Amino acid sequence: MRRMVVLVGNYGSGKTEIAINLAVKAAGEGLRTLVIDLDKVNDYFRMSDKVSLLAQKQINLVSPTFAGTGATPSSMSAAVASAFTEGWDLVVFDVGGDAAGALSLGRYHPDFAAWEGELEVWDIVNVFRPMSETPEKILKLKEQLEGFARLPVTALVNNSNLLNFASAEDLRRGYAVIRETSRLSGLPVALTTGRREFLEEFLRDGPDPRYVGQALPLETYMHRSWEAFTREGF
Image (cartoon, rainbow, N blue to C red; front, side):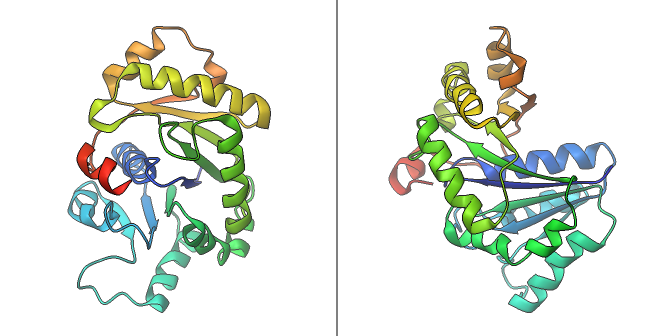
C-alpha cells in the first residue's frame, strides 16, 4: 500500500533527520522511496548534502538546493509532480519550519486531495524548541502551519532531544507534553523517536502505547553541533 507522509513542525524539530531515517528504513525493506525536500530557507541542514548517502541507499531525492545542478522553479515543480504520478511505495515531504515552508505545500493542494486516505501529515515536536514547550504552544503553531499548508495535521511525533546532550529523560519530558497535547487535540501519536539506547530506557518505564506510537530508533545522519545549535538556533 502506497504512503505519502508530510513532515511539518518548528525550526530545529528534527524533520530532516526523521525524513532520512524513514526513507532509509523503507528503502531497506525494498520499498521504492522518494524524498521531497521543500526546505528552501534553512541551508544549515540541507537534504542535498546527503545526496550520496541517499543514492547509495537507492532513495530518490528532489531538492531545490542541489549545488551546481542548475535547478529552476519549473524543473523543481515538475520533479515534485512526479511524487503524485509515479508508482512510489513511500513519498516523504520534508517541509521548512516557517510560513514559507508551509506555503510551499499549498500549491500542491489539488494533488494532495487526490491522495485522501493515503496522506499522513505529521507534526514533529521537540519540546526543547521555542514555541513547542507546552501543549498550548504546540497547538497554536500547528494551527498556523495548517493554515499556510492547507493540510490538516493527522498525527504528532515526539522527537524531544537536546542533540549531543540527549538522554532518556528528554523523551520522558516530551512524552508528558505530547500526551497532554494528544488528549487536548484528539490527534494520535505516530512516532516516538530517539537514539536506540534512550528509546529502550524510556520504553522500560511502560508508557501508555497510545501516546508513544511506533518507536523509531534514529541513526544520526545530520551531524549538528551543540555550539551551532545554541548560537544560531538551528
